[in-house]
Amino acid sequence: MKLDRYELKAEKSMTVFEFVSEGPKGAIPKLVQYGETNLKDFYNLAFGDKDHATGEIDDGIVSNNGDSEKILATVVATVYAFTDKHPDAWVYATGSTKSRTRLYRMGLTKYFEEIQEDFDLYGQREGEWEFFEKGVEYQAFLAQRKSE
Image (cartoon, rainbow, N blue to C red; front, side):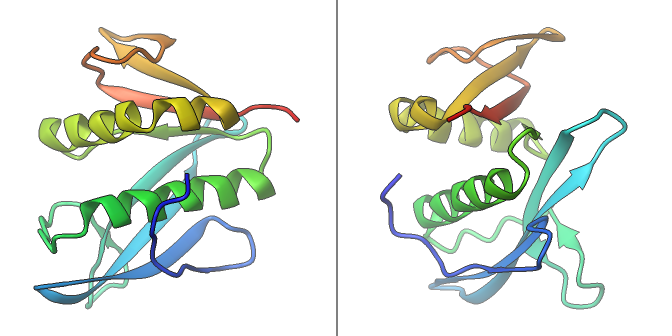
């Protein structure tokens, strides 16, 4: 996707990324983290504001900084960077609330044509995984980079 995005800082393993959201509510530090799970090559994508006190992700805050498209493009850029470094990885994502999961689905739907050029994308519905389809409400998402 050739969308405007924020500059990213990443550590060497490409599992933790930081950027700063800039808007009417000021500069808000954000974190994206890819956490290993008990399944081989299966990673959980966690995203949210960076807690000033702990340095950890707080995914319960609603920033409303007027830059959701730019934030989405930035998070997607981390998926590309992460899967460049970890090409066999499956990336699992869901929102911390139903409305956030819906927001992610809307973003995936909007850019589905571009996404499917580089990724196999799945949605989870009623506990089952299926190929992602526009207009379907999913509880979670799963993506894997297509082989070259």
